[in-house]
Length: 42
Image 1 (spheres, rainbow, N blue to C red):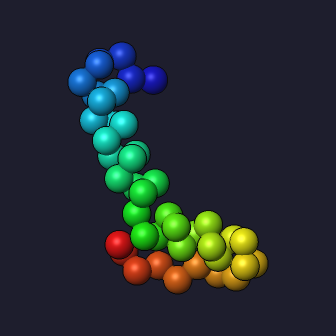
Image 2: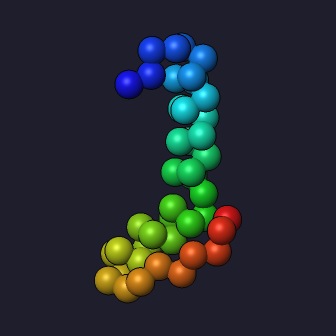
């Protein structure tokens, strides 16, 4: 649990960047297509 509001804000920005990445979209597509994701580091 993060008690520091600044830490909470940093965590939110980092999480947002990960969930809006090309790899996150690839994982969702791969799951829907029942295949292994192809990671590109994007």
